[in-house]
Length: 639
Ligand SMILES: Cc1cc2nc3c(=O)[nH]c(=O)nc-3n(C[C@H](O)[C@H](O)[C@H](O)COP(=O)(O)OP(=O)(O)OC[C@H]3O[C@@H](n4cnc5c(N)ncnc54)[C@H](O)[C@@H]3O)c2cc1C
Image (cartoon, rainbow, N blue to C red):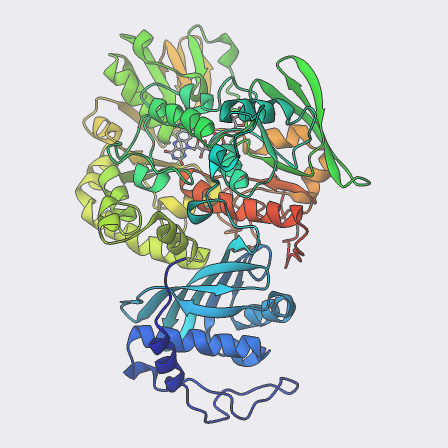
């Protein structure tokens, strides 16, 4: 971790704390210390000193068990997001009462200490922001503090490593083959690698089984490897990259590459800002190989039940046609959260004379030259496919039912500019710090902040939005007016990052029918609810995926599915994300109601940071570190 504030700063910080008792009222029963230092005169000092003083006081109050006084260091409407360090959970305590409860439950076993700022603080309007390091009994952590009027507005604490089980990277990197003295029969790297790969799952059970070797499985596999957790990944496809390779050939990522690289291996500096799906696929194959991950491809997971008596899973898989039973202690589903393609059941579809295809099976537009194509749905795939069809010389009409969030590509890059961009790197930003800062925003704050940013985008791109609306396109900025990112966390759909298709809609190259439903499919077209019929040779359903049927729910017993409940969404109460409010994503990257069952999900942006969060929890369980989980949420809603 980076260097701390100099010792002189800590001394100066202590000087800020006067010993006048009574400024912080302690409730009856709290340990009383007449000489308890209190906050004073913070406004006269530099942001670095204010931060150092706050951390120093916080440490003192926590280490002496003065919970009530520690709570007083927070504003009434403050947030403390903890990732494992205090709660062994991902938990956001909102307000002083929740913070008090969290501290009363967790503080005794956590024993936090050594809170120190690890770089200069930043002042933005009336907020001072700083990152810091700290330790607990079992690990080392880092965090982000935001102060307003000298009191904490948001606090993030996150565990980054376990003492005695640090990742084998940089100064701890393995010596490699050279560590072995020459001796007859010594294995080469290749021989050892081959032996390990042949043993795992056959003569030696993995401690952790990861189902799904897409980007999430690979990122988690790499993390677990550095923590020396015996891990096997399985995937039903031929190559870990095939999810991406099999997508339509004009696809480029809609998140920028500066934000997207997997752990340990940044993309090369000459990579495009938005790589194509085949570049991503090639990268994933290389990643799996370079990270030396043990992967069984062409292996389908069929059934998993938890053996309570042996405290392990019985997992039935079919590996290249052969039935195999695996017995891992920890089971992670990294099978994506999309579920199978969703095709709405329109009357008459069975009698359609042309071709009907879901976007998931759409590969290339070349065959559709000169044909009449109707694309149903106006999210990412709907736009991309409509544009590819137009390029190929097809006659294309998009049918839009619901409003969609559109963000021009340049404006999206602007959203990422401060954290994930070459400019940010030039200013000294690292991916680790950027991930931390992003994670430090509780959902309520994220939503408010993005509402502000999205309002700015709407103003800056007002001409673009006006023309798009004039073309008939139904726009939205999300139910919380916060645009793309919060909606991604709510339902992972309903948006498009414009890389050019919107212009084709505006200039009429791609025809649009919106504010209409689909009455039925006729033999030669699509009958709309306003009575018009769109002639069609081809219907492409860009209608998304069935999230209630993710692969895990077919593999796990029903009672486990019911106990665990919904994945993803933070309880906003908006479409696709029913309440009650959770303030954290449901069931991903954290303990579930089923022991030994985990879900890794999300896009590239999440895989780097949260793969470590998940890996640390698995490692802690492997080595027997006590992991008392604070508040696994009740199962309020089910997929
Ligand atoms: C058109 C499109 C564009 C996208 N663009 C972006 C983007 O730009 N940026 C971004 O971050 N995200 C993007 N996404 C979302 C992205 O695909 C997901 O975020 C990402 O792939 C999720 O990774 P994952 O590892 O969780 O799941 P997946 O990549 O879906 O991988 C899951 C793996 O599990 C395997 N599997 C499933 N069931 C079983 C089973 N029973 N047994 C064995 N293996 C099984 C599958 O074969 C698959 O390989 C896009 C999605 C689509 C559809």
